[in-house]
Length: 86
Length: 393
Image (cartoon, rainbow over all chains, first blue to last red; front, side, top):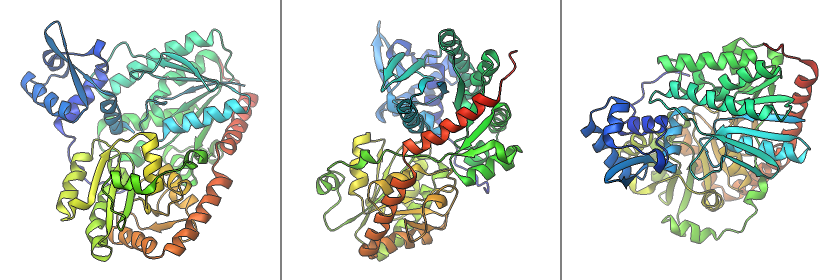
C-alpha cells in the first residue's frame, strides 16, 4: 500500500491513550491531573485542558474522592483508544 | 477437544472484528462438542470469570500499566500468561489458538510451557494496516513474524490475506489455511420499523440513506466516501449519509466533511449499540464499504445479511465474497468518482438492487455460517493436535 502522510494524532487523544495504558479505566484506578502529569510527562495544565475536552466528548469521567478530582477512561473512551491499535 | 483461545478483545471489549469473530467461533465450537476457554483482558462491568453459552471466559486485569503502548502490551501479556498457567493446572488443553499479535507473547510462552501446538489467526498485518514507517510498527511487524514462525498453522480469512502473510513473512504456502469470517444471519431476522429508525436520524421519507459502518481509521477509506458526497449530491440530491463508528481519525474526517460544502448531509453517530446497528442497517438504502485495506470486510457481509445492497472497494477480501453486479457492486478504492457511481447505480436501479440483495442473501446463507467456519477450524485443530508434539522447554 502506498504510504501517504497522516495527520498527527490529536494531543488529547494521546493523553486518553496513555490514561488507558496506565490502567485508569475505572473509578478505583482513577488519577488526579497531577498524577497523570507525572505518569505521562505532560505539563499539568495541558493535562487539565485535555481532560476537560475529553470529558465533554464523553471519553473520560471524573469523580471527587476525598476532595480530589480524579479521572478515568469511560467504556466508549476505551473503545476509542483501542481503534488506534487495530 | 479442549481449546484455549487467547485474544485481547472479546465482548463486551470490542475493538474491530476480532471480538465478534472469537465469540462466533467459540459458540459454534462449543455446539460441536469442544470445550472452549477464552483468555482475554478485563473491561469495566464484565466479570473476571463467567460461563456463557458453555464458553468459559477468563478476563485478566493488568496490575501494572505503562503509558507506552508496546510496554503496556508486554505487561498485560505477563498477566494473561499467569492466568493461563493457573487454569492449565486443571485443564489439559489440546490446542492453543491466538488471535493477532497482541497476545502472541503469552501464547508462545504457554506453547513451550505446556508443550501444546499453537494456531495463529492473522486478522490483518501491521504492514497492511499502516505501513512500516515508525519504530513501533517495526516491533509489531516483528511480533507478527514471530507468531507465524511459532505457530503450527496460520489461519487467515481470505485468499488475499494468504498471499499477504505468506509473501511478507516468507511463510510456506501450505502452512496458511483460509477460514473466512462468518456472521449470524438470525441477528437480522428481526422486525424493524424502518421509517421510525430513519426518522430518529433525521432521514425524511423521500430521502435515501447511505450507511457506512467502521472504525474511524485511515484504512477504512472513509475520507474517499466523504469526497464522493458532493459528486453524488449533484446527481441524487435526496442522498443523506450516516457514518457509524468512532476512532482516532474522527477529527480529521469531520474536518474533511466540513470542506465538502455538504456537511448537513453527513451524520457522524459515534459508536451505537448492536441493536441500533442492526436497525440502521435494515433501514438503509445502501451500505458502502470504501476501505483501502481490508483483509476480509465483515461489515459488507453484515450489510448483505441485512438485506441491503452493498457498494464496496475492489480490494482484499471484499472481492472474494462480493461478485460485481451479482451480489454487490465493486468500485475503485481511493476513487470518489467511482464510489459515487456505485451508490448512484444502486439507488437508480431499485429492481436490480433487489436482485443483488437476493443473490447476496443466498451467498451469506450458503458459505458464511459459523457452523461451517467452526468445522473448518476444528479440522485444523485436529491436524495440529494429531501430528505435532512441541518439545517442552
